[in-house]
Image (cartoon, rainbow, N blue to C red; front, side, top):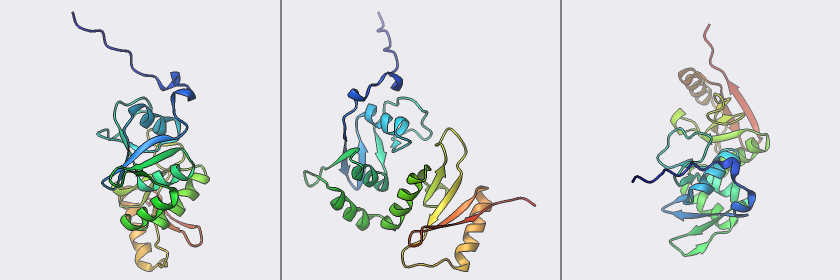
Length: 200
């Protein structure tokens, strides 16, 4: 006889008691992984879209039976908010926010600048997600991926840079190619400059 399939896990049935106060993650080969699929699903669905499930390009707003990967910026944000722990598998120790911040600066281009803008967008109620496929630093939603089209895509200026004519031309071309609002974000002044695609 074939075994009956177990009913799918519903995140609506999950109590706070089922989720640890600080979700465990591991730092392996410069990546932060949430190995427990339940915790990974919880961070994505219940905590406003943190992490990307491995092997699922467009996750639904439901339980997924896969680990997830947090971007280094997401991981630092959650670590500072005391929502996760990060265990460094290579050095066999837990990382403090300060230690992880230093690691991020060494291995991630414009880490500090992107983190400043990430924090500000989250504070404003937006959902910033990695924007590499659009040629930008973030793709930004008001509600979240799968619920709407993104509000805009954002490029973060380095601390030592100023907006140049080349930046504006690049922004205009990119906004046209992806047909979205394109934003240049300045982490020093916390200013946002919008470029919008339109068809005359």
